Each structure stands twice: as C-alpha cells, then as structure tokens.
Amino acid sequence: MADEKESASATVVLAFLSGAAIGAIAALLLAPQSGEQTQRQVRGYARKAGKELRSAASPAGDVFGNVIEQGRRFLKDKQPILAEAFEAGRKAINRERNRAMGKKRK
Image (tube, rainbow, N blue to C red):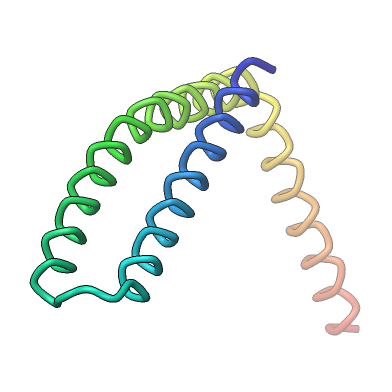
C-alpha cells in the first residue's frame, strides 16, 4: 500500500512539473518581448525544469526499483506453482493433439 502511495505521489509530481513547463512555454511564446530575451528566459526555465525533473525522477526510480524487486520475489515464490501449471498445460495439449490425431487416422 505504501508503494502505491509513493507511485501515485511520483506521478502527481511529474504531472505537475510537466504542466508547469508547458504553461511556462506557452506564456513565453505569447508574451510581447524580443526574441533574444525570450530565448534567455526559455533557457532559464529549461534549466530549472531539468533540475526539478531530476529531483522528481529519483523517487520515481526508487518506486520503480521496488516494484521490480516485488515482481522478482513474487515470481520466485510462485515458480513451483507456475512450473506445475505449465507442465499440466503441456500435457493437456499433447493429450488433445494425440486424441485428435487418433480420430483422423480412423
């Protein structure tokens, strides 16, 4: 449950930062100022957004790593059950194939 909250928080932060960046670019493009001044302003906003995205990406990376580790543990724990199910499926396919081929030969 804590992982879900962390994931949701990281998503909200990323969405907020993306929206802020889009809004800043739109404001700059619509503002009446010289091209050079706008370029400087865009570079400043891009640097600031880059720093904020890097700081937001770190927790998101941690959450992703936790999810991957949970998946690995789940597969390790369930491997015997999955192998048994796979084997049962393989046997059922072979049994049905043999039964169908037997009907065709008659």
